[in-house]
Image (cartoon, rainbow, N blue to C red; front, side, top):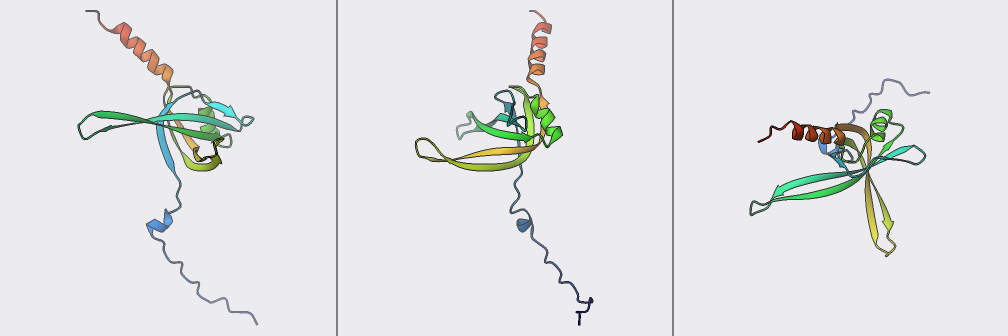
Amino acid sequence: MSKPQTEAKQAQPTKSAEELFSDTNVTMKTGRLVKDAETISDGKFVRIRLATNKQYLDAKGELHSTTNYFNALVSSNLSDAFSIAQDLKKGDWIYLKGEDGSQSFDTPEGYKQTAVTTFAYKVVLKHKQEQSDQSEANTQTSAPSP
């Protein structure tokens, strides 16, 4: 004899916000490229090196700035992001969104290190360096003489 089909399904307990987002891995960065974007792995990826600046005031009210550097990869499977990333040049100001991945390795000196790479799925060119250079040149030439 088979079981009757009328058994009620057990309700799934609702998850708290902490449980829902406990394994979320999303990162957003904005900064300038420190070198031209580079196509690697037979054209499957674009490698980006990004510098971000953080300014803060110390206890004496003095302004300080720190720079952080990040590595990012964009897959050719993501056609929109990939086409933008291919044409990026040193100095371009970009925004990217993706997921961080880490890899541990041993240095030649025998130390353990970890490298973090952002696997970007969204890349937005906020400002091209060439435009910035051109606008500065125009400002200098159009300034009134004393």
